[in-house]
Length: 384
Ligand code: CAA
Image (cartoon, rainbow, N blue to C red; front, side, top):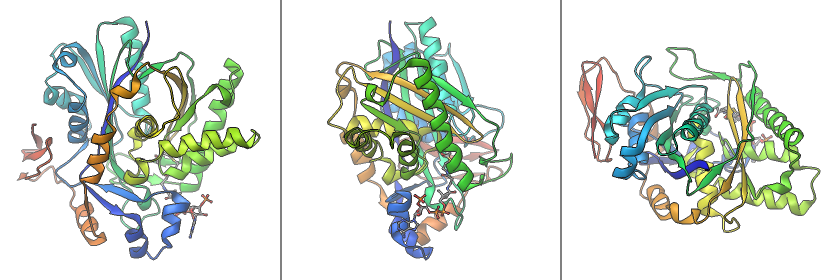
């Protein structure tokens, strides 16, 4: 029996800014954002949408009634929790109409949380092959207006259904994990924005990929040649490329170009969305599978997950027969095309309109799942 990703889809809020506009507003050369950082657009979310509505909109796209009966575990990986106690997965479980006898909980370790969820789901399905697990990666990446991290913000969710005999990616059993207690990016309780040491975060990311990759090679004897593509956590699209380049510089040029071409296919969506934190690696996977014409069933894919603080993991999977039929590129492209572009002044206003949980209020948002209002500190949701 095999276990892995049976279905996958993403959702992003319906607003974005163009990075040229942001560069002009911040008096920066646009090439720094487009080339230096590798971002063309950035998703912006209104106060009427949160990680639960992102998750519900993403999950609704992939779940059938049969799936909702078979799911007995719902896991949300996030670093944008909306409650210190109650897990967003519990609300999501109700919004999705999943049968009641299920475990629902949230996992946190920066951008790594959803990978922990994915591995837990895999172990669970190995023990319960007739069940399914819904794994969500949902976040709002916010560093603050005029901050150093501002061009690397974003928002959205990726939903994955994990099952036996999966139709997209069969997960192998060769993970290499790494934990290092480093303060490169952290957000103390009650801080609205993370504190980030940008250069240290870049260095730690690059070094972490080197460490898990080298350990993987030592344990398995495999090389880059064994992989059709590698996909990375993408805080901004230049980041994964830097980590990859640091490891492949000794390879023949043709081999380097092959891996770099696949990397470009994995960042098509991220260039237009920005950082999804926990979802970025999985957005990269969707992008790779939906935008590459060079992949085939049976190909091995390497995945690098990185969560500041820091936990990293390299793991691998094999593309399932007919995986292309399980994807939905036209829906994802339309989702991006249908977004409204904001001026920088509109973005700054939307960015500053944060939800005050102590103030009763209501919203009128047309997005299928969105916040209906706040009532006595409880969020109520408009359901599809
Ligand atoms: N044309 C082309 N390129 C230009 C340019 C121009 N006119 N001007 C600058 N550049 C290039 C620079 O040379 C640099 O390239 P290299 O990194 O290849 O040298 C790049 O643009 C960025 O320039 P700076 O380093 O000067 O940018 P910065 O000081 O504004 O910081 C940042 C960039 C560190 C990414 C910052 O935006 C930040 O702190 N972001 C948040 C933290 C982050 O995303 N860290 C990533 C690793 S941590 C992680 O992965 C977890 C997570 O999700 C947060």
